[in-house]
Every structure is written in C-alpha cells, then in structure tokens.
Image (cartoon, rainbow over all chains, first blue to last red; front, side, top):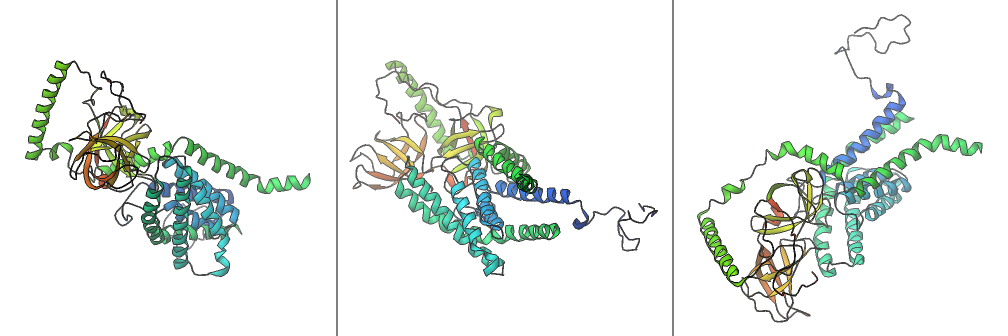
Amino acid sequence: MKIPAFGGSRQKKPKSSERKAKFQIQPLSRWHPRIRQLLGWIVTVGSVLLCLLLLPTRLPGMELLGIGPNWLLIWVVAWSVKRPVFSGALAGIVLGLLQDSMTSPNPTHALSLGLVGILTGLLQKRRFIEEDFISIAVIVFGMAVLAETIFGLQLTLIGDERKVTDIWIYYQRVALASAILSSLWAPVVYYPLNRWWQKMKLLEQ
Amino acid sequence: MVTVRRWWDRKGLQIGLLALVVGSAWILRQTQGELVLETYHAITRPLEMLQSGPTPEERIRDARILELQTRIVDLESQKTKLQDLLGYVEKEPLASRPIPARVVGRSADHWWQQVTLNRGANVGIQEGFIVKADGGLVGLVQSVTPNTSRVLLISDLKSQVGVSISRTAAKGVLRGDSSAEAVLEFYEKVPNVKIGDLVSTSTYSQKFPSGLAVGRIKSLDLKKLPASVAKIELFPPIRSLDWVAVYPKLENQESANQMPQKSK
C-alpha cells in the first residue's frame, strides 16, 4: 500500500522497484529501541526454555551411554564467555535453579553452573583468543568435567543413602560422556546465540 | 542524593529485570518445574504417535508367556485356598486396575535416574505410587503435575528396595548404581543363594508390595564385609523403557501374623 508522500518525512521505503512484497517487516535497526530490547529478552528467555525442554530428550545422535549433552551448561558458557564475571555467575545460578526444578531441589545445580559461569567470565576469551569455534568446544569440554566433579562432591558431602564408591565409579562414565557430547553440540547453541547478541549490542550503540 | 537518583534511573530497569528473573527461577524450582513439564508434555504429545512401539497386548501373545500365565493363575488360586485354611491374612495385594503410561522423557541431569511419564494427577496418579514395566518393578513416583509425573527408578543411587530370593527367602537390600544392574546386600554373612536365583520384593519393604519381580543374580561375592553382596541383572529394560503401568501405593502395612517390622 503506497503511502502518499505529503511531507516526505514519514516515508519509510524508497519508491524503487526493488520492493517485492506489499507488506515488509522493517529491518531491526529501524525498530523502536524499547521494542527491540524486549525482543532481545524474548529471544534470550526463549533459548533458555528451548534448552530446558531439550534436557529430558535423548534424540538419536545426542546420546552416549544413556547420557545426553548438558544443554544448560552450554548456554551458560555461551552467555558468560563475552560478559563480565558477575553476569556469568548470575546466569549460572539462575539456570542451576531451573535445572533443580526439573530434577530435585537438593543437591542444587546452582553451585556447579554458577562456578562455571564465574570461571568462563574470568577466562576473558575476548582478549586472548579471537577464534570461536574450536575454543568454545574446548572450554565446554573442560567446564563439563568441572561441573560433574562439583556435583559429585556435593553428593558425597550430603552423605545420605548413596554409597561413595558408587558415586565415583559412575562419575568416570558421566564426566567423559557428558564432556564429549556437550563439546560436540556446543557450537550449535553458541553460534546463533552469539550472532544474535552481537547484533543486539551493535544496534544498542 | 542526586547521584543516587541518577544511578537508579540508569540501573533501575536492569535491577528490576534481574529480580524478576531470579524470582521466577526460584519459584520454578519450588514448584518442581510444573510449567516446564506441562509445556514439554504439550510439545511431545503429537510426537508420541510417531513412535508407537508394540502395545502391551501384542507382546503377551508369545505362547510360552501364556503357558507361564496359566501356571501363575493356578498357583495363585492354590495359595488363596491354603491361606484360607490357615486363617492367614496377607498384605493387600497389588490392585488389578493399573494406569498405563508411556515414558516421554528421561532425567534432566546426569546424576538422577528418573523418567517422565505422560500421565499425571488428572488420571489419579499420586506421589508414592508404584511403577512396573514388562519384567518387573521399575520405580516409585516422585512428583506429579496435572499431565505428567516423574518416576525415580530403582537404578538410581538413592533408591533402596527390600528384596528376598524367591527360592530360599534370604533377604537383603537392593541398591541401584546408575546402570542396568543393581547391587544386593544381604542381611546375613553366608546367605543360602546361588547364581541364577530370582529376586523379588520382600514383605519387609515399606514402600513396595511384596512379590514383585525385580531381577536375577548374576554374580556373587561372599567374601565382602560386613555382609555378602551380589550383582543383580534387572529384568525390565531400564535403559529403554517405553510402556509402564502405575499402581496405587500400599494402604495397610500390617499383616496378621507376627512378622517383625524392620525400619526400611
């Protein structure tokens, strides 16, 4: 629908023949900043929800010895790798509480994921490593082993009906399988999220 | 005062959003993820129809299974006749109207062995209900939402089941070790068992009715202290559960004869 150009200042599209459709979504840079911020938040929360919903599944290709990738850990690493330490810690704690809601309140996952967020923030990847793909997989591998170790320690210290030897025998299997799977699937989560956040950051400035 | 005002103007929205996020995560944790599980159920419901395995009726058609069923019915009727003769009143047997349900998800972290079923409070499932699959006992219902329920499997590290050997009535405690096998710790140092013996829940168990099949002894270690242990191969396919049946929990735990109650 062509808007008649009286004043000329309200016109949004050039009257060239490049217009293919009559209704087109404006490019993000032309959106109202508040709405853009809201959209950014919606995408962030939506990606967390997607990771949460993926956790109980064991789709073919995403399973090793009955263990799936640790999607929330990948999300925490993707978030904290280019953000300050405090922000990473908070993201880890929030996502840990969410994982508690899907399994059991104690022992809590907030401790392990929070620590992962802190350490990833401390890595200051921006300063040292420019490349994204392999470094993220390596970081996720190390953080997955760390997260499972911390949870194993939490279970040992609680000291209820579980046998300590059983915990640490199982730990070897879990740590390896979880680290391998999470580092393999990390780029799938990291790449689109990273691009979106970078785009949002650019538009804020 | 002005600087505080200015700082608040800048950071107020961020702090508000942060409080909202942390608060909602805490609430979600306290309600044990009811919203998330309901969403998961809504999303996977259309997908359930794509992966339809054999229904329970089809699998029962195997001739040998039918023969064993006839024998069981025979033995059960003999048992009731003998019990009537002795005046023996046993614990309430397992109800005969189970709720069938399907496994739609496994545990959301790596350390808990849980499964998520696609039936919940709307069909009458409550916490503490017993879950059986083809092969025997599978677990206990841990938490319930209107359309889903979460089951703690017997292969979990925290699960303890009072069991006894069917042949000789030697008793012990079955603990899971997060794999398809479990570890049975006997009460006595030299139990009267051998490899291949069948294991089922015992009358000492507080949470489970007695007589439910669990597995079979795979290996024995009689030299362990303080009591012997055995490795049990669990009958139900714990790694690949599909259809399960949910039974109501036990109502009365007392039995008319003078069996001592252990604190299990």
